[in-house]
Image (cartoon, rainbow, N blue to C red; front, top):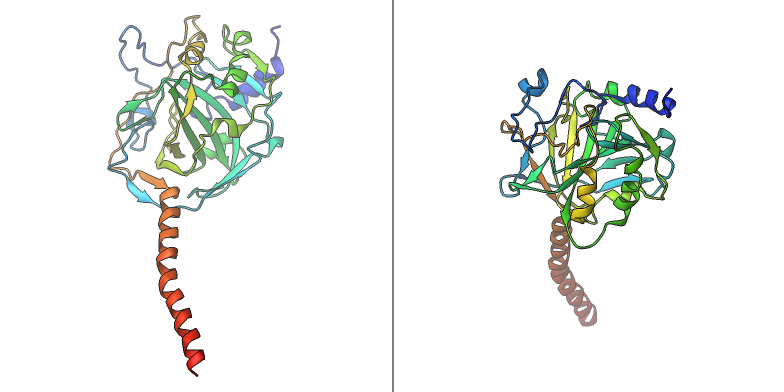
Length: 309
């Protein structure tokens, strides 16, 4: 009997329910190292009109104004949570007792944080530019008992996409995750637990006021079109060496998972919204300052009138 059986049962329950995390073997990413052709995943993956990922353009997006995000317990430690090689990514499973939630930011409800996983080479691109790494923070709407149910409904799932850019500086929270890779990278289904006090907030960008919003899908089979996507414009620093460590993760056939991103999908004229709350706040301050001038003049006139009276 192999170890971690209880954790594996949990993974099987969660399999196939979230963007690019399903523990399945009947589908593969294209072999980009050898210029392999794009595989057909069938069903909604091929026929859907709201598929993800897409290219996000700042110049052709609709301007949006939403209330700020309300993050609950994003600063809670994830030490001891399950870390697994799914064969298509590496994933951290969040127990529900952590009670990590998000609302606001134009989201149509309150969403519970379920799991996070990585893509080496980003799935989304911004203005045609692909980034070296992308993390997906996957949430389900509190209206539904689990993600399996949530993916059956429009906006049942909310995913935050956070991109990484190459730098000279090591990103320590990611190192805390990568330290667990050697114990799971060689075998699909292998699990370990996170040993360090990283938090969900560690994997949000410093600026969460600028982001893209659109309606899309999971990025793995069955590609359910149930996702409200938030892709932040601000990015997280990472070294090329940290990115390269992901490429030692193995698939079911024993080969290295060199990359795990789905190709860009057609937008089909979907509305892509770009939000810049910093700009909104600056505009509000300008409006207040311009309004203060006539109020000040009025106050002076009132004082002068009282003296004349």
